[in-house]
Length: 433
Ligand code: UDP
Image (cartoon, rainbow, N blue to C red; front, side, top):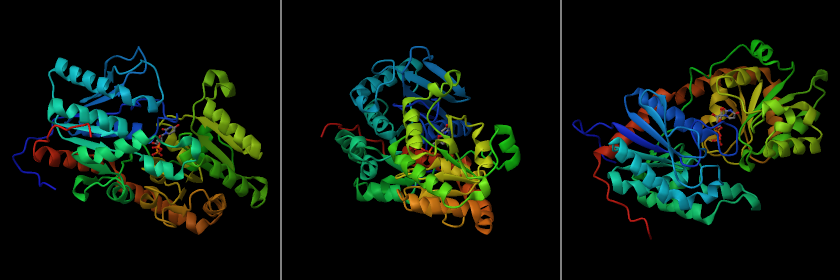
């Protein structure tokens, strides 16, 4: 890796690409979760250090202005590529050349060039490579999720495409820097995608430690109108990798495991979207299906389906809960786990992806095998009943989360940019094989 030199030009302007989903999209939908939060927060923190950040996303409506100022030094740019409405992300690849040309056109109009192009997710990674020729700027890529890992745990219907698998492999050859969120992802990049260890920078995700703070549990419950008794919290997109089936089987078993002194646990389910004006009939299709699954198991009256909850209110939910659970089959970041931990809430999570590094078993949470509802139920039961362990995990959770402050994370990202800017001018890429 090149050492930064003292007289090197400082990174002044960064183009960040988030093609398939906007950093300001409502969270909890099928394509809006950790990556949106990450791009938004990273942009804000980079802008605070004085770097000008433009985030480029595909236009999916006709009303959002072309340029939206999100913060001092942080702009969100709508890019014309494909129809101006939502289409499935598998249909977006053919629009990437248009995406890259409209970005180049925007830069020309504004009279700016970018020092670094940072792509998030495989589609953006590809568009970033197309732009390299315009700006001769180094590219940084973050996968967020990898197709081969999702496929390893997917059932037949939800497999990722061959095209995505191929592009993810190709990005290793053409991106100047790769950011891995944890050692597991780094190893996958080397072993499965053929990346060189020198290309990879290990930078974990960040959490907003000012927002995600412990609140008094009883006050939080009162403020949110939540019931008494044990509360288990789930926060996440409705996606097969999130293990919602395991959660429901495990939760049913938990409820039946003892008599709970007449007050069995309640599951707070945050995810999916609900049109408030239409009440329950305003649930999106995925959430309706999830609710039907709960009904089939006979546990629907123990679950509160809350839809999407804004980030400002989430700390109250984390604090109100006795335990937060992340039963995913695969999890690249696992931001929810770190947010819960920052609020001092113990976690019961699958031992997969990033979760096995953010959570220390029996110290800041409990790790269980994925897709194992029996192990999940027993982990949840311990987190609700073993008082000594709960005390230890509550203190351990907040201590562990402090390692992920955005201040530290964003400064590591700036170091990555600077190293790349200090390195040799990148060659234009020959995209075709
Ligand atoms: N989130 C939110 N409101 C919701 C649902 C989710 O703010 O209703 C946020 C959550 O707080 C977290 C992110 O969405 O910051 C989900 O990130 P995670 O890494 O856990 O999962 P991913 O979506 O990346 O699979």
